Each structure stands twice: as structure tokens, then as C-alpha cells.
Image 1: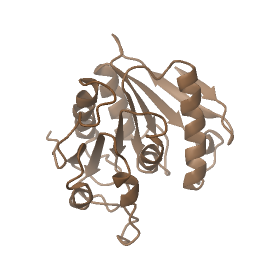
Image 2 (image 1 turned 90 degrees about the horizontal axis):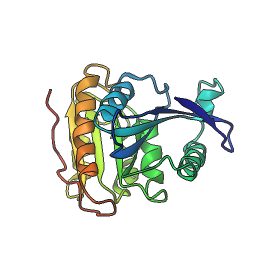
Image 3 (image 1 turned 180 degrees about the vertical axis):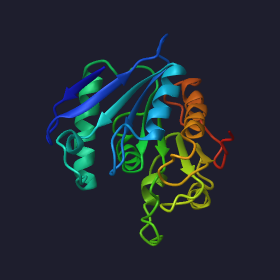
Image 4 (image 1 turned 135 degrees about the vertical axis):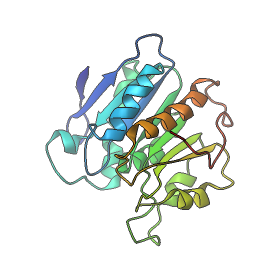
Length: 225
């Protein structure tokens, strides 16, 4: 089921995928700068998370709904995302433990806004640690600023940041879990494995009391197919 949500940047589109049974929590997912909610990893995570009892709300940013090809600057992405989350909360859609997440640029948005929206965790698919070949332009600060349980699912050959680079950033950071999975930044080689990793991490969030900052741990964990 889809609905439009008004934002200061124009309408966003929210697509809800409901579990068959009781809702154990809500997962809000954003897309990357180069595509929408139909990416292989987002589709797989949505299906598997819903099967595990999560309400999954996929957010298509206003620039995509308007048919534009180039994403706006990060502050504008955050502005649209914030408006959607506020509308979803006011509408009673953010029930149970709340996880904000997304792939690539969407993961960055989730990291930057999770605390202010009282999330219980952040799920990052293919976090773009740096532009390809430009490690000096690191976005590590966006990850390390997250003081909530954090799950990162990263392709083993991701040119935007390999798992070992992410591990170096997250070493010693309580509550962070890193899953190395087959594939590059697109996570198209084995989206089912990426989804398995994401749902494994989500299970830790759903099985504990919201508000406990120590409920997910194990930085450096690996997902296996």
C-alpha cells in the first residue's frame, strides 16, 4: 500500500509492507542517490523483514517522485525525510521498536537523523564511507556519531568502502555490528544474503527493550550464506 506525504520539497511516496501477523517493530528504509526502492537489496530486505514480523515503510524521496535524476544536497534530503517521519509518527505508523535505515545515501540520512526521531537502531546497507578512490573524503563521522545500535551490511568489494575499512571505523564502538556479504556497492550479487544479515541484526533490536543502548553488540560479525 502506498501513499503520498507532503514535505517542504514536494510530495514523497511511502510504500508500506505489512507482516502477516503481529508487528514486532517498524523499519523505515530510504533509497540511494542512484535509484529508488526497487533496488535488489532493498526489495530483499523488505520482503524478509516483513516475513520476520516487521512493518516496513519504504520512503521515496521527493526528488524521485518528481522524476528528477540528481539527488539534492544532504541537508535537503534530511529535510524531506524528517517531514515524512513526522507525518508517520503523527499517523501512528511508527509502532514498536523503530529502526531507521536505507542503502548508500539513504543510510547516511538515517544516521544523521536517528537520534532526533527517537529511533531504537540504524540499519545501513552499503554505507558509502568515501567516494571511490578518495579515502581522504571520509564520511566516518556520520557513522561514529550514531550512539544507537548500528547494523552495517557491506559488500566485500565495495569501492565506496570495503568491510575492513568499516571495521577500522567501528572497532571499539559499542553496539555496532558489521556484516560482510558478497558483492560490490550495488549488493546485487547476493541480495538474499544481504537480507539475511539485515534480518539477523533486526532480531536483536526486536528482542530487547527499546531505550536500552546496549541491546545490540558484536562489531565485526559476518553473515554467511
